[in-house]
Length: 267
Image 1 (cartoon, one colour):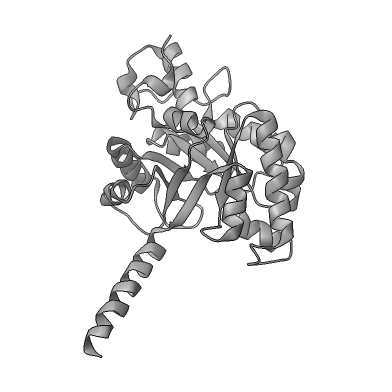
Image 2 (cartoon, rainbow, N blue to C red; image 1 turned 180 degrees about the vertical axis):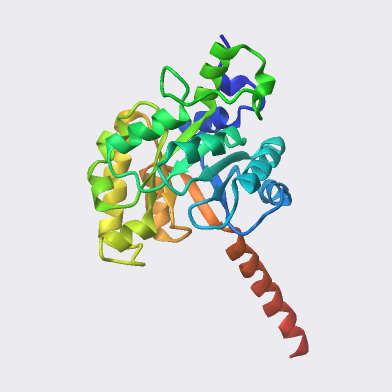
């Protein structure tokens, strides 16, 4: 019986194996781009994965499907952050070619189990088989397809509230959850310390979540912290999945650096 991580094209399973080995995984954020060229740009930049942000953009499901399939062909793990817990959002981005789904605002184990049910085929969940699709080339029969696609699908649950942090151990204990990803900016806002990413409460939240991840063999993800001492400390705690800056922000930063350089020519 083949191991999913050893099958070419099952990039989600390969990413999970790298995370389990302690390798750092860098994920780009796609929010403003609308065409498949962004997948090639992200590959050339050296990112391991990308996610299309349906929670905070006007990206359509069709945009996501096109970018996801281009990313997969480029060897970049394609994922999407869905705008809600609804099973139809989760199943449709996966049917469209995403190998992973990021679900925001998962506050408790009950919600986590519902997410598992939406993104896993039986017996782990109740996702409906779509038939022909981006992974149809497996050609191994329905039962084996269920097993391999379940192993390839990455479920990232976002913890963005004090309630979620309090329930981190219970969420991590849910079978089928692969990662606990802290949305640091939303967490700060809900804790009454907006923008204070270096507050001791933030590090405490990461410590508690990191301990839960270690106990249950789950990966720890970092959202909202892009650089600095706090990020270093979180990586030391075991954070291995890092959400990069938004595509539009990266473009603005690069453009600003070029403009600053060119302006010097007239001085």
